[in-house]
Picture (cartoon, chains in turn green, brown):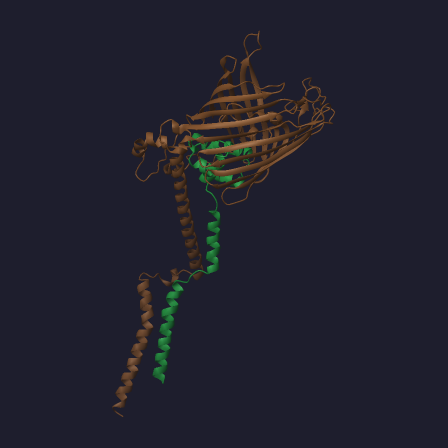
Length: 106
Length: 473
C-alpha cells in the first residue's frame, strides 16, 4: 500500500512537473493583452501611406512635384500652403510632409 | 517467508527506481530544452515575459504591415511608371539599370510625371545639424509666355506673365502667403511704350487653429467652384479662363474659416470653406443693370477718405465638397458653393451666386472637370437678372495608349466647351481643342484653337489660335 501510494504520488508528481514546468516557461500572454497591442499597431497602419496620399491629393489639381525638387525646409511652408489651399486634412498633410522630406533635396 | 522478503524488497526497490526516474524525467526534459538555463537569479518573471511576448507579437505585426505597405508602394510606383512613362523607359532603360546598384529600386518617369525617390533616397536620413527652423520662407509660382493669332488681326506675342507666390511660415500654425501677377502690355494706340501691371492676386495671413479649422484673413481667392484657386498657368491646361467665370468674383477682402475632415480609410475627405468679405460693388454705385463690379470693393476708395465698405454690407458664402478617391489616381471631387452680398452703394440690391463643380480622374491619363454657375442680380432698372454659364473640359494623356512612341507619350489632348449668358442680351459659346506637351512636370507647351460663337451686343473675341509656354516653379 505504501509502495503503491509512493508510486502513485511519484507518477502524479512527475506528470504535473512534466506538464506544468515547461508550460510555465511558455506561458502565453493573455489573449486580451495581445489583441490590444495588435489592434493598436494595425490601427496606426490603416489608411494610405504618405506616398499614396501625396499622389491622391496633389494629383487633384496639378502634376505631382517630386520630393527632390525642394529641400526639407522648403517643403514646410509649401505643404502648409497646400494644406490650406486644398483643404487637405491635417493628418494627411503631415504624412505627405514626412514623405516629401524623406526624399527632399539637399 | 524467507522467499517473500526478497520479493517485497525487489518490488520496493523497483517502485522506488521508477518513481525516481519519473521525478527526474521532466527536469531532464527541461534541462534539454534549456541547456544553458540561467541561474535562478536571472529568471524572467511571468509578467515580464508576458510583456516581452506581447511586444514581440506587436513588432511582428508591425513588421508585416510595413512589408505589405512597401509592396503596395512598389506596385503603385510601378503602375505609375508603366502608365505614364513608357517613353522615358524606352529611352533610358539601360542607363537606369546601369546606374542602379543591385537590389536598389530605380524608377524612371517622363518629365511630365513625378520623379519618385529611390529606396536609397528614402533610407538616407535628412542631413541637418539639428531640427529644422521653425520659421522658413519659400517662393513658388508660375510664369507664362503667350503667342496669339485672332481672326482678322495680326499674330503677336501678346502676353507675358510672372506670378510669384511668397510663402512665409512662422511656426507650425502661421503662414503668410501672397501671390502677384506681373504683366506687360502695349500702351493705348497712339502712345509709345508699354505698361507693366502689378496685380495682387491674393495676400492672406493664415492661422491653423486646430486640425480641422484654419483661419484665413486678407485678400483671398474665393472658393466659388474650384477654378479661382486652381487657375495658375501650370494648373490650367488652357491658356485662358472659362468664359462663365466672368459672372463670379475671383477674390474678396475679408476673413475665412476652412479645413478638411477625413471621412474614410482611402484618403477620402470632406472639405469646407466659409467666408465673410466686402462683396462686390457697383461701378457707378447705382445698382443698375450692367453696373455690377465683381472686383472693385476692396475696402477703400481712391480718394483715400473712405476706409469702409462701399455699401456697408458684407458678403457671405462658402463651399463644401467631398473628395472621394477609390484607388491611386482614381478619384471624384464634387463641390457646392455660393455667396450672397449687397452690391450697390445704397445697400439695396442683392447679388447671389451658386456653383456646382466636379472633377474626375480615371487613372493617370484621363481627367474631366467642369462647373455650372448661376447668379441672381437685383437691379434698379431691369429687375433680377441671371448671368450664368457652364464649362466642361477633358484631357487624355497619350501615354495611356502605351504606344511607347517618343514625344507622343508626353502629349495630352485637351478639349473644352464653355458658354456664358449675361442675361442682358449677350450669349457666347466657345469650343476649344488643343494639346499640352509636357517638357517636364511643370514646363508645358500648349497649343489651342478656339471656336467662338457670339450673339448680342457684347461679343467675345473671334476664333483664336493661341500658343503658350507655362512654367510652374
